[in-house]
Length: 598
Picture 1 (cartoon, rainbow, N blue to C red):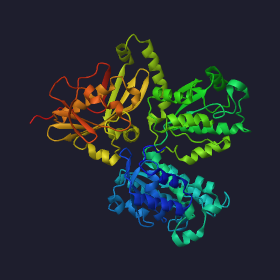
Picture 2: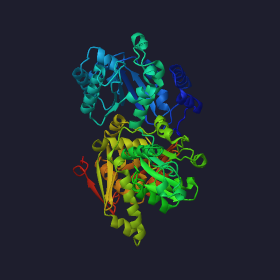
Picture 3: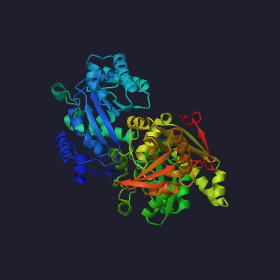
């Protein structure tokens, strides 16, 4: 899922296949020598790596690992075992680096047998260091939980009790939304004790695992960062027969479908459980099935073993047309691009047909054996989501509300009547009130995005100084659409205020939302003393949707520079920025102050 990557496909393929330290470092070296520029559309992060063990191999390969996930990174590596000093001291080199993301990689070996040792001392030290960094940086912090020790020979062993105590206490104490805990225990279990533990390398080089486990550890950490910066999966489109359940419902009937938890049907339930977990983290689910709609709905209604219900899917295309046609309709209905879309189907012919029409969609080669499917999907790293906003959790409900709006539109006498009947209310507030959702929108919005600047929080805070940054939340009689737009306006000279960033969810297009947001920006630009509002459109492969937005809103072209076109809207006309008839705009803070008169 790296369609936007500018890296060599061969290098990325070799990185993905790297299973030894030697193979990983060869990829890192090639990445360094090639010096290929990251895509402008990639998020840019400043990553600090600090640990209580030797991290030179992780640090060397982090840039290529993140590039494989369409993230550009500048890296700082702390000296060996200086994690507490670096995090606690605001004058440390780590703080001077001004990281946007910090990885605190802690091995159980040093924690359990070093100077801290006791559960209380370990938890208090880690918590104090992390909380100090939260106060003195704007970074998101990833903390690895203590991994299993070689001495954990049973659940009654002191080593096991120590680790369980530390992990449970850390989970209870590190609760900030900017802290992500990364548990390496599943990785140790997957590798096996013999492949993971090797005391020679810790004794001689302070490596807490066999060097050839480095690619896997790096993959887990890079997936965690990607899951917080720009989650790589937003929509899963899934087939039904022999994919979500065993058998063909049209031929076998709903009663004969294999969903036996004590037999092979368990593996279909495993996939359903996996998808249900994604749904609970905000991933949208949809169905693309060549089938009879009545038979499908009957199966969902009458097979109580199902872990997913028909209503869990935001869209369903059930007919006999090509799967690619179903995918196209689903994307249109949900107003989504192909970015972050995964298509699951047991049939290789259907996979090839979708892959040919939509090369940007991830179409994994599902194993023929259903037992191998969930493990294979987990190994891709596509589904790691670390920041889950309220909008993400409510996404399926929002799509259901949209279906009710579409029904109301069909029943309305005309479009103006429909808009009036929605009873829309828009609430705007400062970006600080919605930090996680703001960053989520900045990093994932492609179509309605005028400049596609992938700011981190520190960059965003700097951009709004002297200007303003606002979020916009839309509600109507059918429900809450959540925060659907972010705008940043900066002062640009004595007379101009410039729209540096404006992006919006495509779910609300066509409801006069753009006009309402513009009215608010105009009022705020006037309050800054500006006489002209300047807009910029920077063309990308995915934002042609807004190419004519500024002319449509009354702006006039004033110049071009590279791929950017600049427009201006004079603010001396009192009619500029008048409210929109169909939407009531509310402020989450006191009304906008009028500019002072000199």
